[in-house]
Length: 101
Image (cartoon, rainbow, N blue to C red; front, side, top):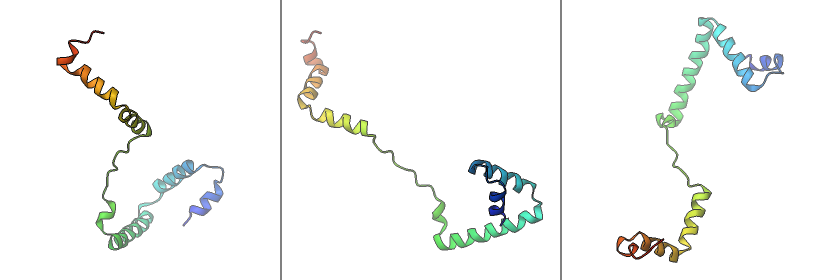
């Protein structure tokens, strides 16, 4: 209701500072006046749940995406089959005894 008038009155404030100001105003508001807004919020939540269901608030974790560097590294390794075979030979105990570094 009063959001626009407060924005106009404190036009020099940033969005974060405005949020703090609104929080201070909310804390200073009397309980009976808060009840009106709390009831409106509850009604809006009921309508939202009727429209979208309870699952609208369930968290769906994001899957990790590979970074470009990891993709490029994998592509580079795949391009050198000879080196991959050489590394596997060096790591093979039956062959590594004949290799001296």
